[in-house]
Amino acid sequence: MNLQQPGSNDALETRNRSKDVAPQSGICTRCLDSCTGSCDVFKASFRGREVIYPVPFGSVTAGGDKKYPVDYSHLNIMGYALGAKAIDQANPDKAIFPEVDTTAVYGHTHPIRMRMPIFTGALGSTDIARKYWKSFAVGAAVSGISLVVGENVCGIDPALELYPDGKVKRSPEMERRVKLYQAWRDNYGDIIVQSNVEDMRLNVPDYVSTELGVEAIELKWGQGAKCIGGEIKVRDLETALLLQKRGYIVTPNPSNPAVQAAFRSGAIKEFERHSRLGFIDKAEFLATVEILRRKLGVKRVTLKTGAYGPRELAMAIKWSSEARVDLVTIDGAGGGTGMSPWRMMEEWGIPTFYLQCLAYECARRLATNGEWVPDLAMGGGFSTEDHIFKVLAMGSPYFKAVCMGRALMIPGFVGSNIERVLKGGSDTPRNWEKLPPGIARYGQTVEQIFVTYEELKEKWGEKLEQIPLGAIAMYTYIDKLRTGLTQFMAGARSFRLDTLKREDVIALTEEAARVSGIKNVMETQREVMLKILEG
Picture 1 (cartoon, rainbow, N blue to C red):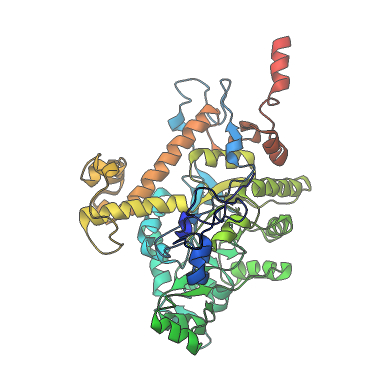
Picture 2 (picture 1 turned 180 degrees about the horizontal axis):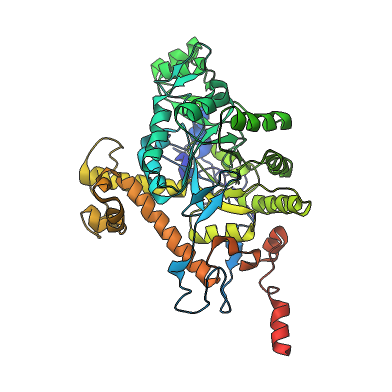
């Protein structure tokens, strides 16, 4: 069985002409020399390297669609009728789902509380993150969850000011991003600024911690969508040359006269800016964490690692244990991106389900040996409340939260588009001329469309007018996740997150049971069942 069919995908805006396609190559079984297109090979014949990436850059997020042999759908959530955990009384008047506490806590000496066990993926230097940042930042803040500023934000800032030694003096874009979240933060959640190779060279952690009051820095080893550095596209020659001067890898080489001529003729329409590959070293890692804490006064240091194999995963967890890292986010293959090579998204790395199972095994081994286990979070293709439940239950007691990328961005798009139609303005693109029927059926005013509007109005009063509708949409989506999660948890008779156990999920297939160590549905509670029947 072929798990993923190459040759065409909506992410690349390519299509096979025939409905019959060779499963391995992705080429039509009958390829005509007169074909007018447009499969991957056809389009790459004249656009070349452009066909590597999802399009159009700056207006799209993409997620892998490979069908892995085992994923979280192979687990089901257990329900119980006996007893209740983390609530005073197990009776139908007291133990109701609105009473479930979804507050999550992570961190070592300076822990952070979130109203929900979720936080955003790293929103960095892509155009789409920049354009919708106000919605993302304010939405995360008023929802009480953490927000991650991704890599290279300072490095691509056109207004970046540098000291003579090449270190950041001021970045208006980074300043905007951080201050928006800080202005609306309500005691819950945290803003975390990510740092890669170029960010460290620019001294970004020092700048954001000393000048902007950021208390959390995330060291980046990788992500699930790709196994190379971060990427964006640049559509003008001057910016491409500027980024190359700042030390980035820019392709095709904007300094090459032939490339410049091709750009001016219109053959080359854009450049790619790439971050450098990061390489890990234990001594350097431990020293960096120590410097961030002792020299810069950073209260929380986190680590983001990608869909690497068991060796790098073990290093991430073990070294983070020794360094007392506050949170390790593990991002599995199949997750989303603003810009990653499409075939890389489909074909590299350990899929999320398998990776979490390996991470649980690593954490349990450390705990068994009496070693300190850092708080863990899982990312890579999550969007629903059952995903949250399954990740936390299967990873109990080590996994504290779920990283959600594209799912938390979509409300920002939706709300911003609604705002452009209803209120005008120019902060975001005008993608709609009028409200789509699926929205208009609920009304033509903000109060009619958003079910949480009055709730937010009661809390924020007149300040609500300053909250972008993209943020209200994000809050509304998170409210849906929270309500759904409380219902699942009440059904499992767990009224606080830390009472979730691995026994609260069951494996529906033998393969899922083998990979995860979760009991198969036909083995779960079997001994208890027989004891009751024979008692």
